[in-house]
Length: 257
Image (cartoon, rainbow, N blue to C red; front, side, top):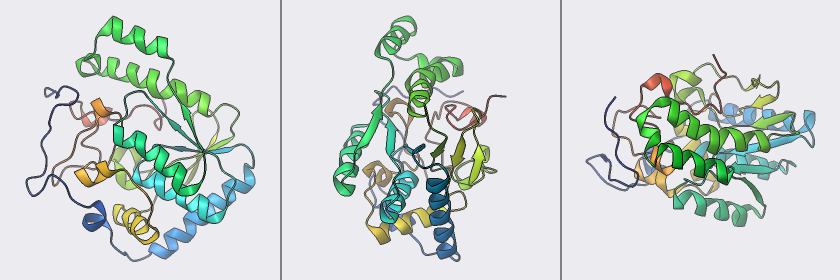
């Protein structure tokens, strides 16, 4: 396991540039896009019909989730939007929540971790606990993500995610409609979209997005757990980069073994 950088420390950036437009880099019209777009529309419409009043979009505020919010809004679907405000997000991510609300004229419900639980974890294990073992990093994810998610999903029969098969090996077999480990329906309308598809849609429909994507961060989580990736690195290489590739999930989208 390589030594991680301290939170806020500089990380290696692609040599060509420290800032670029994600749209210019990634947005491309690809064969079959219109078909995939129609399928995404259909999946959202079906979910909104079958789970009327008990469906929610649990947005991570990543590029995929911003596309889904736009799709929901354009179809006029009555689907509330909620997010996990973990207490460790980048300033750019927090600002995006307000931009999203203003752009679409809607309210995003924030679910935060239990403050005392976080304070006790830091007191008992220290500020750098997440870098010291996978168990402690996952414990932090449990406090900041899994517990708030359980409250976000309380009373819900279905939720919408931005999962795509292309994102990682662990997600390569995810289905557009499947049950989560609590028996809820998990709807992932972009499962077969490419990264180029996501950015083509963002460009075409002027969807707001996190400016950290312009700084070579395709997958953005909490600030201490996210770095930019270099050319040729996997999509999620910047998440928990000091850990083994097989461990790179927080538990939101992986069933217990």
